[in-house]
Length: 251
Image (tube, rainbow, N blue to C red; front, side, top):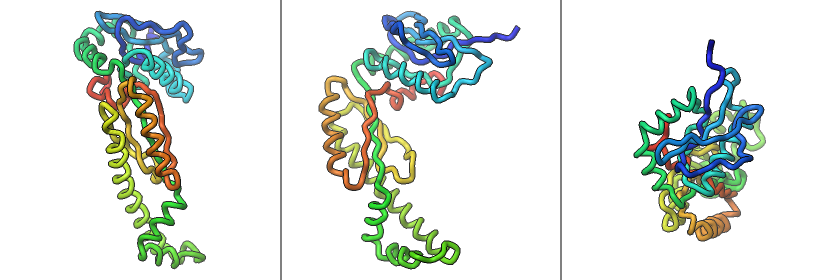
């Protein structure tokens, strides 16, 4: 008979970490979260059906809430979303095989948390700035204004290329400025790929928890200086997703 359930792994934590009684896992209904311990380590897991797909928005939210909530009180190595093993023995084998490496990684993240800073340009204002600074682009914009798209296709394509190149150059510069501005306040930084063609900046930062207030204040100052052109969002505190690639179980 085929196995019908498995264990979804959320993250690796120190062995003394206990899930809260109300911790809810993925699935419908949500699975009960427990800890499987081995040596100095524990894995946060919940039982899931192997016959039902995992990947609903609610599942991802449950995963993130559990991992980020844990990171607020203890170091955690997030395990890639969707990692499912056959049972407790498989979890114990995993912890045993990588015990020293995972323990060292948890020590590294003790007292540290991730924040992500994401900025997006105001499209109309950015295009206006590009046109104001590039006579060739301004001339193309004038040529296509008020004319049918089919008749000005070549000009529109060229104008789009100029704007795209300008955004890319500005994005590279903006990301450097972001990292330079926040670098003295963080343990590490990690660039992130743009999620939209109008992204201005996107980077993750590993922050000592005793410097969180100072870091947040610096982000607010950065955002205020750019508020006319860029809408900046601060995401966090989060688990150190962007800083654990060397310790990931599945990659």
